[in-house]
Image (cartoon, rainbow over all chains, first blue to last red; front, side, top):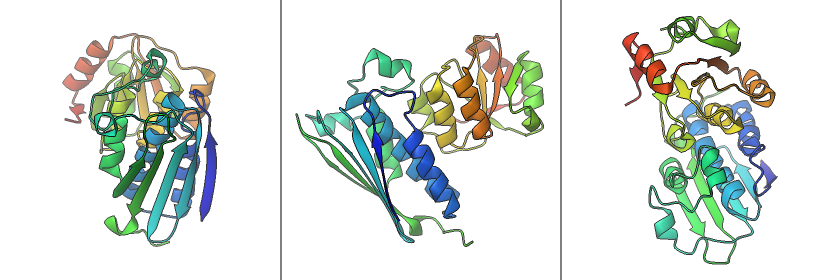
Length: 144
Length: 114
């Protein structure tokens, strides 16, 4: 199953809609609750990042029986120093983002914690693409 | 403790999810920072927060948290309440501060996540 959604920059009232939709689909497909939680926490962090930090982007989700791969891509402005951005507590978030309860510099580190594999392509003045792999075998899949 | 007991202890008002007040909860986590809530592994949590916006409800939804206590008399908007009802999340409000509400609930047996 292949699904994609657009994510608008700065649209905090709708931040989480994509993650919510994908969570419903994963539940309908009867994936293990702890796998769904790992996927959705990582995706929600990535979705909030697109809303908070980018010019907008999209979420592409590929669901197979043994793997869920989610690619979150934005149109910039990119992360100049990725290792710094992966450091817990480091953030460039605006006051508006902090008022939303985010911007503590935890997002990318939390994505890394929840995904089985994480690849980030980025750079200054470039799009950012985050690819998250989740292996179903990490949890026992619920049989229908 | 049950959510009904939570309401009594904090002199709370139930905004939605009244049908779930007999639900037993064991853990509490107090934070205005949703980034911290998203790092928790446990599900069976009462989220105690003063952050009254859509992202508080969304964070609860993503974290499989089914009950939120808004402190400092923060009132959820209609959009937040609709979102909470859709995801079967109970919302309780209290005039107490986060410190007071957390202290009272701790004394009545609610355990910290860590």
